[in-house]
Image 1 (cartoon, rainbow, N blue to C red):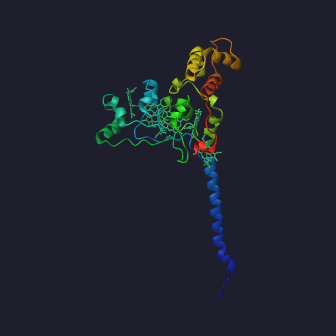
Image 2: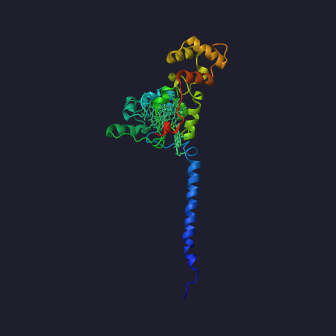
Image 3: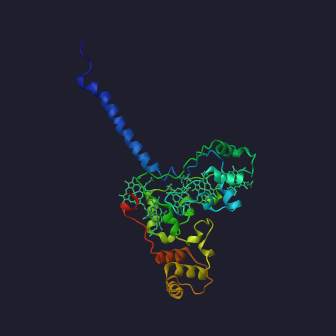
Length: 253
Ligand code: HEC
Ligand code: HEC
Ligand code: HEC
Ligand code: HEC
Ligand code: HEC
């Protein structure tokens, strides 16, 4: 028997396989582009080894973020608390609640609780918490309303475009440094006189001059007219000389 099929057809399966691989790659790239991270990262809510509830501990009990995330102001990286921090209360409070069993176990064995890290940029990105905190960028801007969360989830995309959006117009996000940890702060809550006195002090400017210049720029008449984000953020940006990096080397070092 001779060869029934012509020679070139032997290559057909190979060619088909090649086409499929190329197609597959194209689909994978498109998926990677469209679904990460803006589209899949938001809402990511892994279950944690202990059902720790921020809304109880922050809103109900009034704990400050820094009670547990104690390094966030001083260091590039924000820590999660050690078991000892929980034990300050839970050696006594709700001792027999089964939800706290892993906490007791961790204390006995010395093995830390393995919290699942939710926010995690690729390692070619440089990020520093303390720089943002020092310039009045609230946790709320980057992590959402954590004070109301029973389980923490990824509330913002943390994509490059998202970082840049704020870096191009930081005045839309800045607030007085003392309110960074207050996740329910609103610009209308600010007392104008206190705000201008503090800001003038911080920036080494004269209160009267700063107030006068702003009165013109933001067009308010009375001191008790509510403040807007435009005014609060605009004044802080100028006073602090805030100019976040937009060049590639700023975030990719
Ligand atoms: C009593 C301790 C405690 C307090 C107070 C607290 N947290 Fe947390 N936080 C935790 C623990 C424990 C975790 C890790 C488990 C989890 O994700 O729920 C965590 C996780 C987080 C995460 C997610 C971290 C990640 O993995 O990416 C964010 C964001 C966060 N906290 C923000 C805040 C903010 C903002 C405040 C203040 C409004 C605050 N926390 C107050 C204990 C605390
Ligand atoms: C300042 C004291 C304090 C600290 C610190 C603290 N807790 Fe609590 N926690 C409480 C109190 C009080 C309650 C009870 C609240 C209630 O019943 O309304 C509670 C409740 C809980 C519950 C039960 C919630 C439920 O739905 O039954 C868990 C789980 C818990 N805490 C975990 C933790 C973990 C984990 C840490 C450490 C990261 C921690 N707590 C740190 C005071 C604290
Ligand atoms: C400008 C945006 C921004 C602000 C403001 C911000 N964070 Fe973050 N946060 C991030 C990014 C990005 C990450 C992931 C990179 C990292 O871990 O450093 C992160 C990670 C975290 C983690 C996880 C650390 C870990 O190892 O699991 C915690 C906890 C946290 N932030 C708490 C806070 C608290 C509390 C505040 C307010 C005091 C805050 N963040 C303010 C952007 C921000
Ligand atoms: C809501 C506003 C906001 C968001 C979101 C934000 N930033 Fe910033 N960033 C700032 C401000 C304000 C500064 C301080 C600029 C200054 O002091 O002049 C800053 C400064 C920086 C700096 C310079 C710090 C230094 O040490 O030189 C880096 C790097 C940076 N941001 C990276 C990031 C990255 C990466 C993201 C996204 C994951 C991000 N930022 C998201 C507002 C923001
Ligand atoms: C404000 C901070 C910031 C600046 C400035 C910045 N990047 Fe990025 N870049 C990021 C972050 C954050 C990511 C990670 C995105 C993610 O994980 O979703 C990223 C990711 C990337 C990626 C990976 C592909 C992607 O889209 O995920 C490339 C390539 C990149 N950046 C190039 C650049 C170039 C080129 C510049 C200058 C024009 C630049 N970046 C400026 C924050 C920044």
